[in-house]
Image (cartoon, rainbow, N blue to C red; front, side):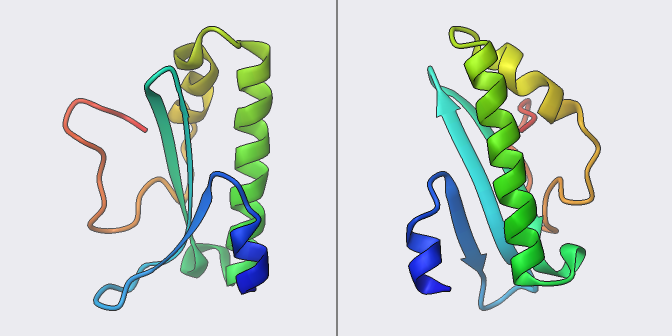
Length: 100
């Protein structure tokens, strides 16, 4: 899995020693506008399933960015409004006034 993790652009593995969160984070930034989404192993049932969900989300967001190349806010908006099981792991929240 280590070799795979190094080759996945915009996706980072998170394993915290002192919390129960283990999973993946998708982060994309265009013109200083950020999009971040977390995918918990526990919620998806396995490390492989959460990675697959993270890769699928990244591909959908990148496609939206291609459709709105000059407007990342418009590209990220549909994904920010989606209600997912994985919005944020417990203890990790967006900065005040921001929705990721």
